[in-house]
Image (cartoon, rainbow, N blue to C red; front, side, top):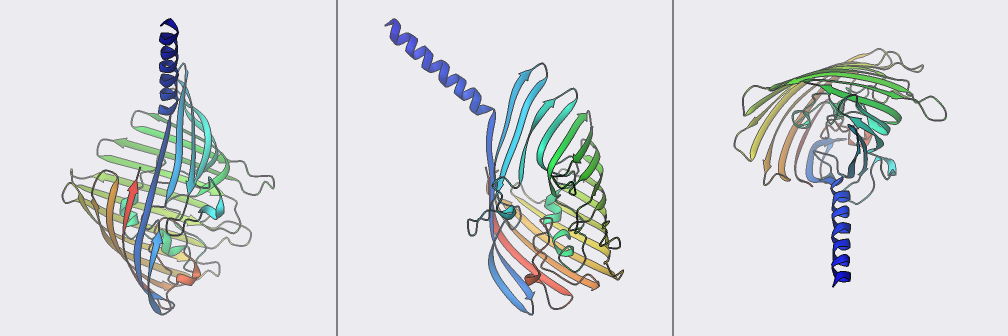
Length: 355
């Protein structure tokens, strides 16, 4: 009898320990697939199924272990994938979205090392509400449209980085350094300062890197405001200046101003509109302009499952050209998706499930 009691007690203790261990690690992810129609891809309209139409697909593990005395170990590893064909994203990197480990303290902040986003990423302290920008944002349209700089919204992942963040009341500050890999050429530095109190969220960030070519600009300054004007309406405004600053290009730049409104019509249904304007200059010192209007809806069947639709119209002038713009904030599109004139219309609808 005693042996049975001891065995059961041991199993219970083991189960409790395993449950505690499991509770310190969270499995999360998002799967997003949509149907897209583009009115002009090299002169022809096109239908296709796209992966990550609103939010990039991901599978991640996030962990935290208490070390006592206000100190905890933290880590995140995040895998990106294309749900439409099952391939790996981020150039085939297994944990290409994020991979870092560090220490966290309520007193002195969180210090992490690894592959990480800069402070312009929506998940960082910067107040970028991606909902407004994903309903027609400019970021996806400009970088692939004949200018070498993007407005950097959505952030860029940097390898070999050290990142610190700390909050004191409504103020959050952060600093980030990229020490470069073995060739010492891919270095970066970034900082952010954010104030958040009830309905108002204001922030600014700066980034400098020495990458060549300047895929997203080498000097980026950004300021953003999120304001919950009412319980139903959110206003978002963002200004970004991005400049190329490498030996091959010190002229390209992009100055952007974007604004959006998100309105919760009913508990499950939200509507959004946005407008953006961009003034650009390419490496040949030729001016350009880019204008974009967007609208969309999101219907939440549950906290985790969303049905959405997006309409986005782009018009360009001068050196910018026009590119496929239906994935704002995610990065530059391939040249094969470009329009053969100075306008392009994109319509898409999809389902996103998070867990």
